[in-house]
Length: 398
Image (cartoon, rainbow, N blue to C red; front, side):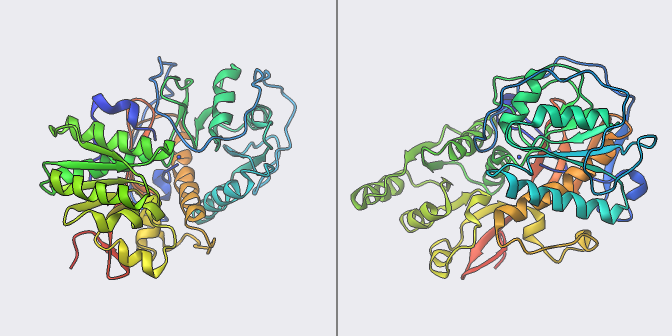
């Protein structure tokens, strides 16, 4: 499966987290297509799209110059200074806000590294320590750094100055900011899901589309990515409605949707609102993001019958042979499960970059079918599922 990207929607696609093992490790994890080139010279970076939830801010300070003295970065696999560990995982493990999310990413990274018998080091930091943590990882000899996890931390690194090692950032800058040289972003971006669903609706034969959305920034980005791709595919601009939960407004929405008679409806809504709106949509095929798959009640599952959504392969097919050698803990949270999958793929990408920037990189990972594009973002295509009779099944199944 090839992932393509339309130049007109580059600003919608980012790479929030993805990835694969080096060729010598392909027997441990899924197949990877990669061609290696010498380390790239600094090129003018492209602008990127907006990213994840707003994090704590940090005043950026310049990255200090490397020092010859050995560092003592905390890590899962310690090594002497004369034999530096090539991979460093830099995460806000000491943050009261982001620590739990960081632990999930760390656990996924560790599971993939264990399956590959690979060494790495972990550098923990708090809400104001990412610049110093990067300097520590670099001084310890890391050739590849995985992180930051938080968007404001990535902003701090981008504005701090100084030369960076190959950096696999787990978030993305806003669409007006350029990535620093040597930084790549395999984030779990909802925009990728919007693009995938626009292509699927088009392939399913839809010609008219209605978008029902909320004012939440995440849902606006999702709807914008869908609309941009839909128009590029030749469709007319969708009729758009803002959700109002008042009963009389829901009745009005039902009348307007019936009048428009769309072939498809995009629900740029959270799980609760999607379940509220679905009964008012008639027979149109409904699509939405992975945000809907969040431990729904049996009642909500019935309301969402036939709704199609994108999900990570790690969650869509837990018994897949491709992940048989990777530990699968129960986090009690779908969001933490997704971050764990991000950690798995982040390790796999980082392993490839140990030998320098690859000319191409494409593989089937825990977060989806992942491909590196020219703007240093990883595009992701997940698994399409649907609700049916209170269960989650592959889309289109009977």
